[in-house]
Image (cartoon, rainbow, N blue to C red; front, side):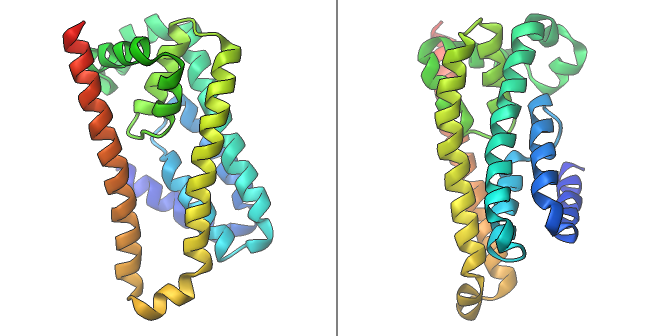
Length: 213
């Protein structure tokens, strides 16, 4: 269902390429509420659109990607700050995030502190928002959060956008050496594999740290 939703969203972006930067910004903002929208796919789509369909909107798409990501992180942090404990106790939240995972994220945050924000920004699959909410619930300084997440978000969104942009910009060259479908599948699978590898390594650390506490 989520994959189908993202497929429709990406198709919608292509059909409305001229205003895609505005759509991307608002969709990224909604990810702060933990809605089933992939932040990483939106970043990749923005870069590819900038490199192919609407190169004259490259700056708009990049700024929309960065500020959309940054503001969504702030939303997640503030939700944790004001609704953290009550939110984790709700039936809806327990369905999405197990108590074991919540304890793991709390241990991870306690162990790495401000560095957990930078690490968490690079991890998808709901872990990202979980770390930000945990930081908010843990009463982390808002100024410190803005500083740490601002740097991490800028590096992360710039790297993803740039790679996707170069992929789109050099599409014709790449197409001559590899079939279109194979190229797209390779790019998507490679992105998922990298994200999963990082997620697996960090999750393993969280499990170890939660068992030792």
